[in-house]
Image (cartoon, rainbow, N blue to C red):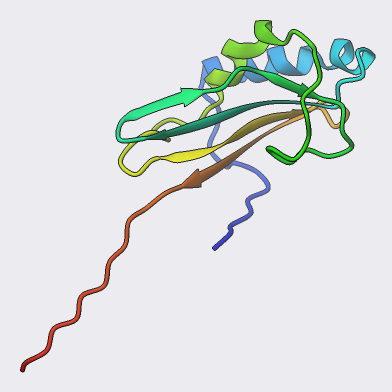
Length: 126
């Protein structure tokens, strides 16, 4: 089941607000280099998680894993992206997703997918 949420109603923590501002401040430089999207993928489970390195793209739209990244050193943005990775994504069955900077729109989005376990029980008399 997919849920789409346009805006997060909760205010950002000060560190997250600073990270978002720093990413948005890079948009002019990224656009000049032909970069259209910058993203960091995160994945975790069992109380352990990791974030991948910053990847830059020059495609018309962003879809994780569907486009090749371009060579651009975005490592100076790593800690800003990591500040926006959702808290607790690595707990229990874990979760995964992307933090994406849309350079032209000057917008940062977070897509989080949570994993869960489910079971069914059947009881009957024989």
